[in-house]
Length: 414
Image 1 (tube, rainbow, N blue to C red):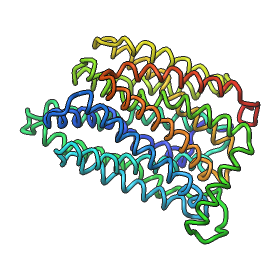
Image 2: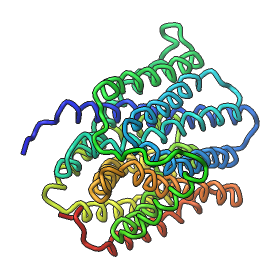
Image 3: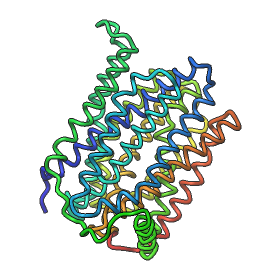
Image 4: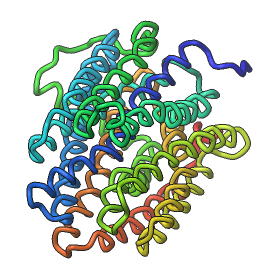
């Protein structure tokens, strides 16, 4: 068994380095920037948190609807790269112009477009895993993607922080620093993607058998659902994934907004989340290594329990040191549960239909993110307290754990 990563595996991993920079800034600078704009417009913290939640929910809903449709079409010969490139362009362009917008509603709309482009690219990127590596290497390659994504994204993020917080020393005010920061992230994103675009070739595909119309797309979507239901292992895992990844995505996407609502300062928020990226790097690699010694499913179960404890701790959070401690705890499990879920699923599905199944996988993942962020948004708006909505995540994580335990033994467990 070869130990070194191949060039194509490295190119694939490098895209995680690029897109992770967008996710990091989306979880830190973007919500802080938005909430500051909203505050200037006279919108309360609770209402701006609710609007932010709704925007995240809509972006996930868009991909939940389009994901399996685009995925099925991209499974045809030679199409995967072109669908990936289109979504990449939408995300990069949206990111580049974010800093130029100073109206809270317009900012949310542009962010919605950029986030949808990013999420769409991941459908095809994740499905590429079946083309760039083998089953027995998928855990390691997937974990390496998340790991290097965490540490690599810190490079442009630190530059962005320097521009925003210390740019005045070289004649750059915070406003100009923010504009440049979004453009810098967009540039980083596209540069890290070029090697994959140059070298990737679709290995597994199906020949085009039908002309695409609304009728054939709908019928194809129905067939996709039937394929999933016919395989008990895939169906049970997707149900489990829907519930447990809800907690993961919601914690990642709402951490900054929640931290501001309970009184954590902007600097503490940014630096704590930067620490999360740094600590997540070795732990993501560790989970990839542990998958050689421990069954992947067991590691996923362990991570879910870890997240339940994280949510319990978050309910009483009201001090900066507690947010820092929470950031470290999230870092331990964040990369492992996401990377192992991706690689485990890649071993469950037929390779020639990887886009189709990852499109369905995306429905469950994005549907979960939609449910979690929408739940927090609605409860926060009604009660004026974010803590009550966060508590519901414990139930969702518990249901996810139950379905993981209920999965029948399958080839992915070998």
